[in-house]
Length: 256
Image 1 (cartoon, rainbow, N blue to C red):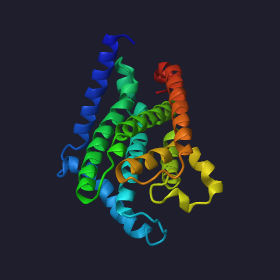
Image 2 (cartoon, rainbow, N blue to C red):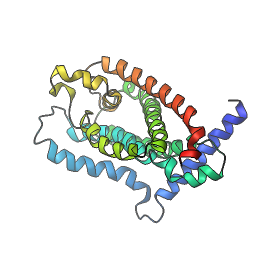
Image 3 (tube, one colour):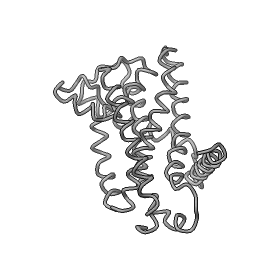
């Protein structure tokens, strides 16, 4: 891809992302506040209920929970919204010639905008209530880039598969709640038997949730090997998704 094509590709994706942002909050009263209110409401409900059943030993469980929910919400909402989008936008795909991955990336970028602002608001609260490690904060850009790449890769491959196999959209809706409980959002990994750790090595979201808490709340990583396995799986999923999309997107018109 040369410089002009990349500039066109980038401008097109940004334009679609802003269109998505505007459409999402059109006619709402609270507008952008919803991107922060949603995880706050989740934190309050889950926090009050869950902490009575599981002895999670952290200094501030609500901040612990909120930081995990920010990561998870970006990931799950993006994938859930992106998976059926090639099918929903069939008329646009059939009538116009444009980078088709932009349909998926516009959703990721609009959610990324919400995610970054939510992190900023969380940091303000943490600064006012406790100490923050400068060393940890330096990891935040790494976390954001890693999470964006992982989410984009999963979204692209699921959306591409859903063009040919419409069951994929229903499968994702069924899997996401299970994936949520298989990710240490509400609990710490050390509460679980070590013979189950291999399951968390297969889940790259484990690494991102733990890194987020280390970065903002200075909570030590439970196991550094999760980072290695999480990074490896992210790269693998990215390669697979790009190759599959490149192979299949030229046939989307036939299946749509």
